[in-house]
Every structure is written in C-alpha cells, then in structure tokens.
Image (cartoon, rainbow, N blue to C red; front, side):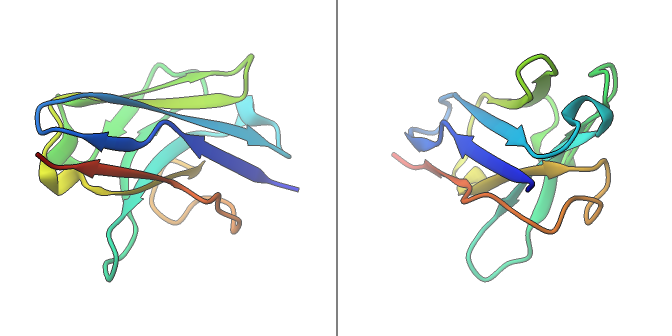
Length: 119
C-alpha cells in the first residue's frame, strides 16, 4: 500500500534552516510528480512546493518562493524540502504526497513532521 514517512522537523529559531525528507513506498515513485503540503491546526492543508518526475520543474507557494527548495532522489524514492530563512508563519505540520496540483495525490497520508519556528 502507499506509504509516506516524513522526517526532519523540529524547533528552529527565525532565520534558521531545516531539511525535511519523505520516504515513499507502494507506488512507482519516479512516475509521479511529488509535493510538500503544510497544515496549521484549524486551517486547510496547503500545497507548499511541487516537483516534476524528473526534478527539472518545480512550483512553489508564493510565500515560500526563494526560501524553500524541493528536490527528489528517484533512486531512493525520497523527496526533500530544504527550508531556509524560516519565519514563524512557516510553523506547521509538513506532509508529502504525490501530484503537481493540490488534491492530486493519493488518499493516504503520512504522520507528517512538525516544524516550529520560534525564538
């Protein structure tokens, strides 16, 4: 079955960096675009970044452009999110899933990884 295991979150000060990882299984990873979503309690999950199957094309939420970088390693079935210049408003639980646009992914979700940006 489809599984996503996110890791790498934590507590970081404003201006700091984190690198998230997501190990995927249960589907042909290299055939799917992949995305990172984030969710704050009480709000809808939003797509933060997406990457094409080859990794050549990427797309970002306006508020994270220039600060976040999505990448993938098809040999390892893993997608990454490098987050720099973090702001308190980046605080959220981060999830990965397949797809290029919001809602395109599989029904199943991982447990997510918590990112807290606070001084």
